[in-house]
Image 1: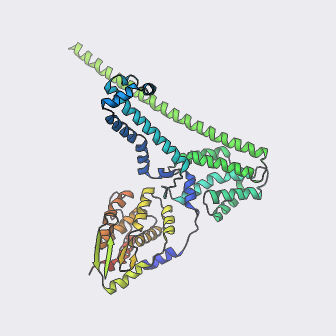
Image 2: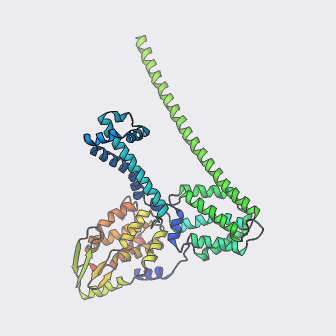
Image 3: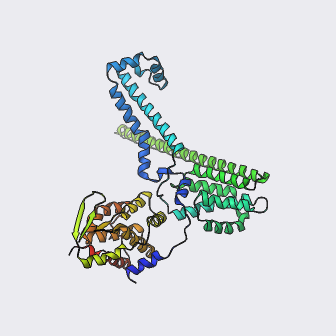
Length: 300
Length: 158
């Protein structure tokens, strides 16, 4: 086959898409511009290095006696400086410069933070591309989210049409999945709901989304809990069992987070103990070496 | 007639003279199999970093103009690379693209002018340690890459 025939054959066939609206899907991941490593570095600079840079520049501008004099007469400024721990520094001319420079840096960092929070509230940042193959991520996430949704819908013995539609619409309209794909997944999973463990799946969701750079755990968790509430309310009646299962789910997330935090503390403590033990071992070796030298000297 | 290429990185322009026979052969390259949306979907499915995916999109926008005819050489290279990668999945996508771009850039001067500066960043973005040719182990794929390169031969000045 010629290369042109290869091209025609390959591009002539179309595979079924799992995600039809990739922008919805990427939005739900909640990672925004953090998808790009260079932007992650840039964002860190904006809040730390640039703040220091602006602070230093402001400090240079404040070296004139007139400016220092104006600040010296402002009692409120003195109290602000004291508040940020620079009250003592402000007693000398150099102290003023340090104080003003640092304070302007603090102000700038504060403004940055304000801009940052307004960016979070007022803008939606969706990365054009993510680091994972989108289909693999899409299958992994639906396999983690869908079974508990179905289990909740079936808690009263059957899955109501309204509940089924709520599940289907969540994945199609909120996440951007292909409807046919979601329907097939629902048909496959609803046959084996007895095997679904809420605690185990919650644990897996947490682990998967925390370890994957393309997922924001908190955003996905919140969307997930809202999804469960929407299913419970889909038929207009919040059943006692449904309410209990949502509470169980929220508790399972809290418990999984606590276990993860405890594991982090244990890891940090183990590392600290190992470091201390190594330090002690080094100290003992040094004392031993000194003792040997002394013994040699004495014996001569 | 004259083929005009504008380097996407530097904005520099390069031109070559083509005869009617070359121009007629080049018309084959005009057939495009994917629109920008389809390309984006394919790129999304690749196991590459978001930065590397952005590089692919940049490559897809590189064109050569002959009079009123626009040939999207960048997109054609990507169509070939994605097709070859799907047919030879044991070879990493970066290796396929690096080998294809490297062979094309080194054998057709005007494409070397367009893509020469891109080959190195692409190798880095795709983590090609030994270089695109050394990383290519499959001889059948090697043959297909040479065949793919021959599609751009009419762009070589006589």
